[in-house]
Amino acid sequence: FGVNTLGEAFANFANPVTFFVLASFAISFAIIKTPLAQRLIRSLLKKSGNSASKILLVFMIATALLSSIMSNVPVTSLFMGLALGLLAKMRDKQSKADFGKVIMISIPFAGMIGGIMTPVGSSINILTLSLLEEHSGITVSFLEWMVFGIPVTIVLLPVCWLILTRLFKPADLDKSIITDFLMNDEIPRKMDIQEKKLLVIISAVIILWVASSWVPMLNLTLIAVAGMILLFMPGIKILEWEEFSCDVSWNAIIMMGGVISIGQAAIKAELGDWLVNLFIHRLVTLDLFMLLVVIGLFVALLKLPIPIAPAIITILVAPLYSLALLMNINPVILFIPLAFLGGACLLVPLDAVPLITYSQGYYSIRDMFVSGSLTTIVWVLVTAAWIPVVARIFGLL
Image: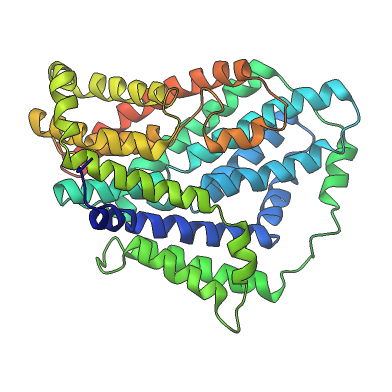
């Protein structure tokens, strides 16, 4: 159609975000391959007793923590597997169904909530930052993003837990079930050499990510790719390429690169300007809080017809940048909420993250929609209230 040349299309496909997604899958796969996540969940479960609500909170905290440095999809798969192991030990069918419903909804919710804590918590965050820099030349450091994201997670996670426990009211588990689960012989008591190597690599990657706030040459994607390469190095060999290449989600990587390329073509064709002239200029009269609420709700609802987060981000980046210029505000103020809500799909299980647990059959679309609607409203309100506060702290307003 003459919008782009073939060379431009493939050049846009080879975006750093595509390579970040590949590196994040490698780091996630390495964590899944070792018992690190199981150790985390066991240490937290020891303090929860047999209370269903406390066990739910443990799973949500553990999922959110790992999701802050891992892709949401493998994190959700990992903790779903652990939850299924716990459910397999339950004999009472009604209790199993009730607890299964709430824990299977909570895991993807917690993964998406935890994914906003750091810029590396989701490929959507990296994509948004990349597009922000491309449009405006503005960069957001690792620590600056954490100031935006961590408080929202700290408020939202317990609120989501409260909504789920009040809506579904799971009964407490039998103490023998928890005892049996904690006595899993498959997890060695002491860390082996592979676990220690992985801990060192992950710690180094996280330290370098944080250090990138002061050292511009420490690019987030570059650090992630370097960490991935170390996992395959002789003498370390936490991952084998043949094994990894079979298990990595190449579909997701190809989709990410393809959507970015299409998004760049849309920008070149001035689709964003058309959208601004169509309806977004009407938002100029709103105050900042209401503007962020409208944007948040619009993005959340847009996930219903377009359940592909990278597509939503690339479609809306140009219009929101134009809106920021019209309102004479820093585009960061609009781009951060776009990333926060763009990566959230709490209403229906169309996105890959909730689809993982929905496929187990423990909850219905109605169950997810009711609990997800309440959580989404809180998410939008908390984000809209917190973003202006941080913007003033950083002198963006």
